[in-house]
Picture 1 (cartoon, rainbow, N blue to C red):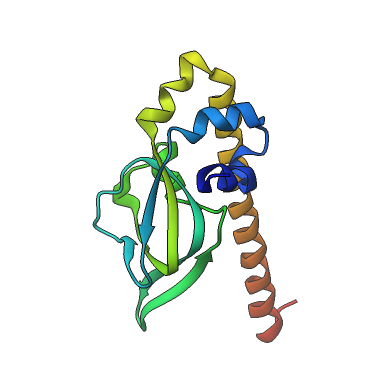
Picture 2: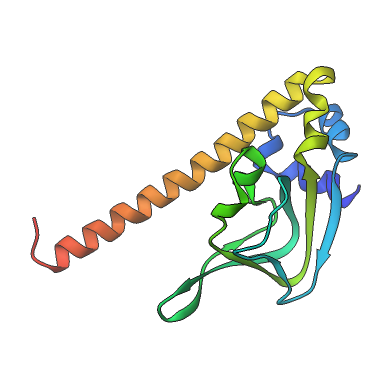
Length: 161
């Protein structure tokens, strides 16, 4: 099995796809390699509108704070990187630095290549975009839960309720 196909089989973005449909997608991805500490993307960079799926290693997401650079999340294999620019956001909204942790492999597919499937395989496009939305929804749900926990912590400790 190839690294691309193995990664597609474990990604939430392709969970509705058949093996045949994943085979069609497989040829559209390139594999990019990064070494430990290598910056993948940082604020100010023009990020391509690629769909990126972490295949191997980890990606540490860091933001600049008043205390310096702080890690806020670690992407694991199967996670998506840069999903907002792929879906249609602007790369000017990049506010975090992504760095490789360990020997990292990232699958990358330009949106233009993906869009070639619109006429020939519209159901693949539909299913992948549903998967992308489920992935983003999972992030929003997680952030909402964390926000609620923080809110409860603050108000319980300061005498609220």
